[in-house]
Image (cartoon, rainbow over all chains, first blue to last red; front, side, top):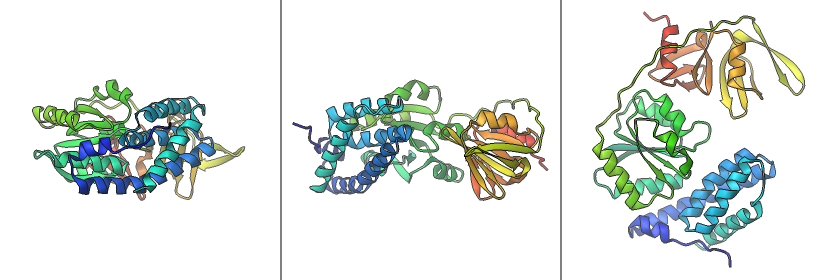
Length: 106
Length: 237
């Protein structure tokens, strides 16, 4: 069973401020697809350094959405990219797809 | 404390801003998606505290700290815990928050910042010795063609990762090379490295505002360590 996103971190830091929670999810829904697209573009072009930068940025969204195990996968994948390797790409992109599906439910 | 937030990620800015709202001692003046905009703001406004992301494209948080003349207190925010040692080499850095930022940890950083008196004194070091070089032409290799550039027409060289961008009066060129290599090829009488990512033609300066230089339409940051060298080169009235 793949790890699923959750709102535990967002709830914790919002202190129950529902307006803020909505605002934040709105920002993530706009920002995340762009970051994902940039990453996919760079990895297809084998631009590993740029891809690592994109993964670095995406890691924050992964952690905000409470995906702890996935975060570890992203950390390892970022290191691999910095070493010019694509190991872990499939698992990482599966995480991205899970987040995309999750965000569509909002 | 009046503060600003610098982070290229809108999500991160929103979270930090929200955490600040929960602290009555903090007043968020502005948010910036990049460091260059923040530098311009700091030239005209006093702030007590900066929340600064390290990992930003083109101009990192460390580049920013190197550039501003008299940095206020800074709390670094990053997803990468590996920069911690480097971070504490700077006196202005009061804490280092790893994303996602936990409210309790955030509060601890604010208490730390409040306990430290404002402003770290700027220290201006001595300038380096000027080297010499000669020749009016520079050849660059682009797609197996050697292209001649008339050196005095170059007004700016910018580091772009593994590449450098050479800007001339007529055209811009991106070449796979290093700042060190091109610096060695250019005459020191005209060119000056004012930041680790920028070499300028001092004859093309339009104006200088505190810690940035206007050349053509480009506003270029001057790092604290390079500022004395630049000032020495100016024919000041």
